[in-house]
Image (tube, rainbow, N blue to C red; front, top):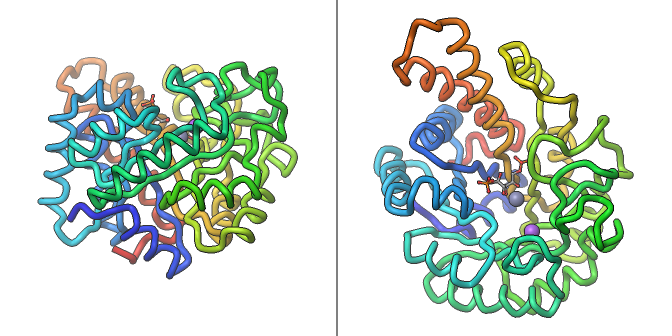
Length: 328
Ligand code: G3H
Ligand code: 13P
Ligand code: NA
Ligand code: ZN
């Protein structure tokens, strides 16, 4: 059934595991996630960005989620708004049946300008009040996602690493996190630790200077009961980079967030781990391969089936590594 964020994350905390939150834009992606969940007996968080909602349309998306709940009645499913940028977006998600919303008040509504702390507290508290009245969970964010390496990644301060904020200002401040959680009443807190969205996170295997796992440990010490969320947590596996490039893709060498670092996070309060890029890479590599190997074919099912299988494989791997397998 569709359940709230609390239902899934409280169980994860009690049993020391993390839950992958996979992005969804279409039927095949939901099918991949649900088949992976069935195979591994995992609870599920599916999330839709604002871009996903406009790409697929709310009505289609809502019915895809309802279909998943109907087809897999034994699996708890959270339907989450990823990166809501305003009270209005979160409210429309709730109206469309989402059981959880992210109010990302770390940025102003333009999605670029770092917001003031006061603005973040205000909009996030407002969403919490409205959402909780309907039994919907809320994820807040403090700090700005973005690479600590110069020129890399998609920094949330809108200016890359030469942006308007220093490293220390980008990262989540543990003491401020304590105040933020107390003031807003959020169910989960997304932290900024040097990860960024997309494939180009790091130019070499990340060490502590660019991937600040120590922040998570410090935040968890001050907020032992708060569910922490890691964004930008695709691992950007080398084999998927190779597969993409083998079949005509043009990815530059890059490094993502190693699964072992995520596992360290899970030992320190991380309960929701956002993964989109790895699935995008798996799908696209499989489509490229199928099209290149069978240029005479033109039935979309001939390349969407391998794409679905490839995404399912990534989902299964993450569900097992994060420990959610066996916990549906
Ligand atoms: O927030 C990042 C997710 O990968 C979703 O991306 O906004 O392009 O749908 P999107
Ligand atoms: P990736 O780009 O690393 O998959 O991150 C996705 C994400 O954080 C969605 O909110
Ligand atoms: Na953000
Ligand atoms: Zn994100």
